[in-house]
Image 1 (cartoon, rainbow, N blue to C red):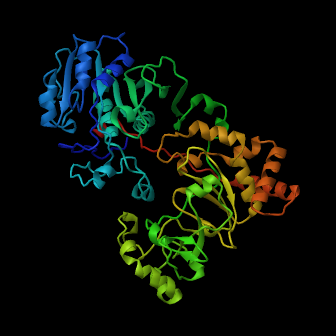
Image 2 (tube, rainbow, N blue to C red; image 1 turned 60 degrees about the horizontal axis):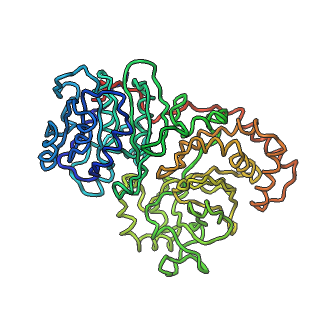
Length: 531
């Protein structure tokens, strides 16, 4: 096994993300867990005011209860109902350092760990940030552009499971639903001993004033058959589960039952999905069309036409506003390594414009711009300038694929909230758009998309759609008809025979391509290697 880096973090006196659980909600959580098990030991990590300890004493008066809390004011209050250890949870080995009178009795871990991410701590200027690690072993660009962001609660969950798994605990805590999915995925990838898990949705706005999808996530840890499916309940008092999510063959699925009907198309896409252009300077690089490019304030911008391209953003793609010119993007490079200093001679108007806005461009904080040409942007390649594209918004819950051709004779570019496939041939673009808009593709994606995610659609998700499997499964006449409609959208004049030729060309290319190995978010590690 590959040994991981030390994940320990320091969070002294951190109030960010500190949502104190109201006592009525704590009582409802205990009710949802049921009273058919007599818990003899109850642990509340990051216990705050200790309301879970209070509710536990009411439901299980004979149980031994212990809290952990780092903030002294909270410790004074929670100690009135239970023993509380005043310390940072990450300074403890939970199996070794907590002394129980009955250390072999049933253990319930309950609570509400902080709802905050490492990047939020950075924005808030907190010095109590976790050690910045690429905890998911992401590739360089993904790690640099935000895919490596993680929630503090994930650390707490994984620490609890890793250090207490020998005691077969039930762990039941409030958290974001995204955290629950990440924890379940990690456990599945690393074959940790999960016997059962459930999610009960809660109204975070009502209880905490937070606009976030949250839940009570419960995991039973212990020996026996491992199970990485999770029953979903719409409320704490729901007794029947309408659906299950979980990990199937190493892949996270939002609706297992729906997934089973279309899983044949869950594989590897024979084409590579690309993200749109990233520049982190919309005020400078994105312009309105008003008898030529103008700034948001309406000021005319004069740059060479070769560096201006029609722009579509995620809402444009989602709403289908893809045929008329309303926005421009300034694109100073054709490739990531292009030396922008050459623009002084090649495109003096553009060079002057970029220098006029140097304060904004030079002030971009992302590390991806370091040691790169001045005024550089990302998400560039030959694909950026291909005439035809299939595009989808990454931000919308409803998936709408669009076939998009040139606007005003120029290839369209997209911002980094969109994902695209690029084509030199318009008919091939139309066929792929038809495949992705087909009923089998729609069913597959619906079963895999978590609509509560900040970005429901990701490159990782789209790369799972096996176009080759779809093109074999969909009836040819249905596909031809849908493709001809897409050709009309692209304003292409083509016949049924032209479309059939395009289908055959794609089938031939895809059948000869070698599918890459599936990638997982986390490398396999043991519990001992983590903590």
